Length: 356
Picture 1 (cartoon, helix red, strand yellow):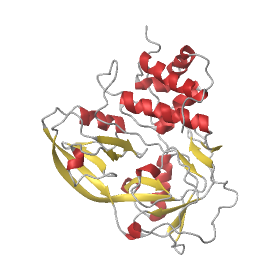
Picture 2 (cartoon, rainbow, N blue to C red; picture 1 turned 120 degrees about the vertical axis):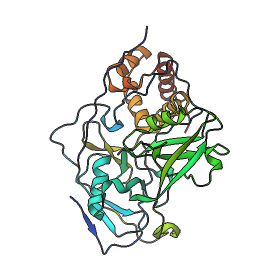
Picture 3 (tube, one colour; picture 1 turned 180 degrees about the horizontal axis):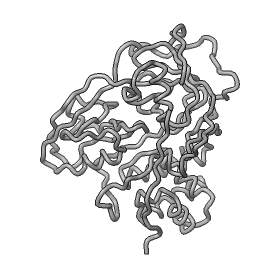
Picture 4 (cartoon, rainbow, N blue to C red; picture 1 turned 135 degrees about the horizontal axis):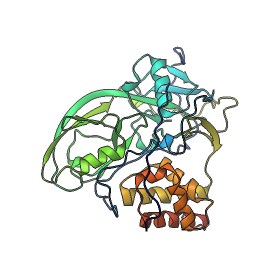
């Protein structure tokens, strides 16, 4: 008998005022790099669903997994420094409570459409997937927004079952390439790069789809067939050759925390300042994330954090399964065996069997 049944996921839609300082032109990097990334991917080698659904569920955005959007949202008034990754004055961004609202604020600051932003990195202007902005931002982090650059279309022969792609999304409707496996089909095509936004597959627009939906579409392409992928790379110029500053006076934002505190986006539309995770919690989240990658082809720190929070205070696997059953996470259709694996990751972390 299954431990839980499916139910309809709840989806909320955050909405987006900001200033920029045209005289503040220095290339500043924040002191903190404690960013737990909301990076989610799909390796096409991974298809180990026990009972895979006929279609991927219309799962909620990670920002919406715990509840409905509140009508009167108190938005944090912290101020974050921001630049466009290819070069710009420094802007000051405040008053946002979700990733979409952050993107809208950046777009308003620099007077362009929010749809021009592919993704953001923290404390690095480079296309650095280890520093992607996800569901949280360290209070001393410096935001770099990567804009759309050149589009390109590539015809690919799917000569192997696995293309070798890991896909993530930006939390605002764009899926893009997070990793390319060495020696894979995609690795042999020089025009495809990490950070490229996947816009169309065989003429079908995939803008607005989550990472797992795009990954499933790629996986479902028959081996031996030829397909066309339309990609958009990020704009590259300006700061690409500039290294982080060394030495000099430290720049701090008074009252915004030590950098060990983090602004986390909540499912109800609020954002809250919390301390960084302790070692046990971080080890548990990392272990859960590894299981998500192995069993489902999804690498998503925020989803892993959600699962850890549900299991961290439970005493047995049945209570853990019931907690997942009572949450919107059941929209992902986890099997009973996978629930047991997740519970094992939780208990191992508690007992110190995971090492960072």
